[in-house]
Length: 229
Image 1 (cartoon, rainbow, N blue to C red):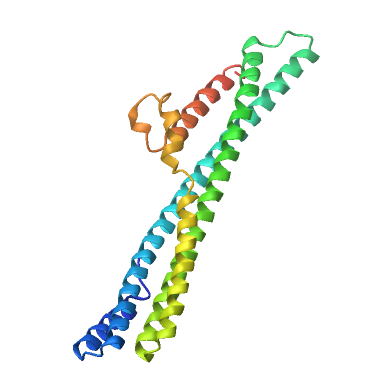
Image 2: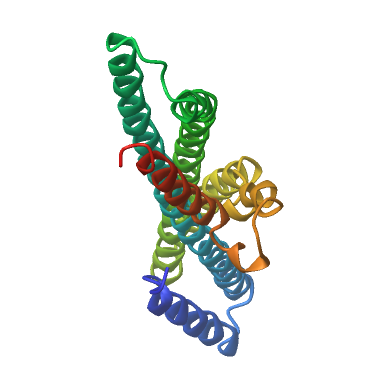
């Protein structure tokens, strides 16, 4: 999160805590100071939850783009395979032996297309998992901000029970934070590592699968275009 909606509230809490200590309110001043400390801890959790939520949203978007690229590559293969089917069938109707290159390409497409389809579906699933994790972190951050606001009410109204309520709200936020953290899916870079081994150079590290797909698509297009001339 680029903006902290409870920043002003936290400043007021620290002001009230310092004011209470200066006037020596004894036990009352001590719990106000503890409440301000609680708000600071909740603010730290809120900042962390917001940053992680943004990170997982970015990952979800990048992986979705990669999945769309794979589906586009799959569709291109499917169209070219259909064209080869038509050529082979036309040759059979003419009682002519189909071109060997066409038959080999058709076999190659039949082997590659299921792998591309499986990869696209796997990426779609991973993108959804990142989006769900993003929403969980966002929920945790919201709970932390609400708890901070309740702490402010407790300090201003000098109602200790509101401080206890904020602690409960913070505990709920920590639960969601821990749940999202423990079930976080892998980042896109971890999924790229196997592909970079087959990449021609290290410069394709940031988007290896897309680069390989584009090169493979160009190569297939050239090969598929040769028999048609």
